[in-house]
Image (cartoon, rainbow, N blue to C red; front, side, top):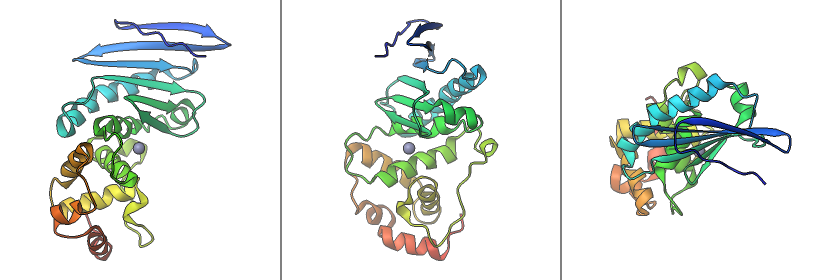
Length: 223
Ligand SMILES: [Zn+2]
């Protein structure tokens, strides 16, 4: 069983248990508290600093843009066992130490994941693909170095659909804002958080149903 220690001041704490080291760092800055639990003793310290910097740069912007009531207390875990890229629940982001070691420039994984904290949809009635699309929309708009990670919205392809989630959905949202309703992502984000989002929200906000929008997008997908 893992034990987690918290410090109330800036500092680093390390201990060894069952043959592996875990260190916890707590940073209090500008009213935010970021706790970083590193389970990988060999993880690049400069990369940890970049993860932290990105949090303090991006999170206040996302808070201001989307959800001023979001928590100011966030935990990052650098996890040696996690096999995905990263995952977020309850203001706790788990980063795969393997992935981040292999892809150190993909720093805006932070931006995508902390957007999930800001979203705070709870047991949302909204579709998961839209949640992920909005998180990548936010990464595209607020990311600190998407270019450095060679991360960009992909060109439209006829094999895509709006519910492909992530970047495909994000590009469709950018297009929808440009062609039909500026600010619709903010509106949908709020509706999803308030649990007032429905399938009809597309038509109410843009004048077109989701299927009609996608057909128009496929016909002229330039952004
Ligand atoms: Zn996500």
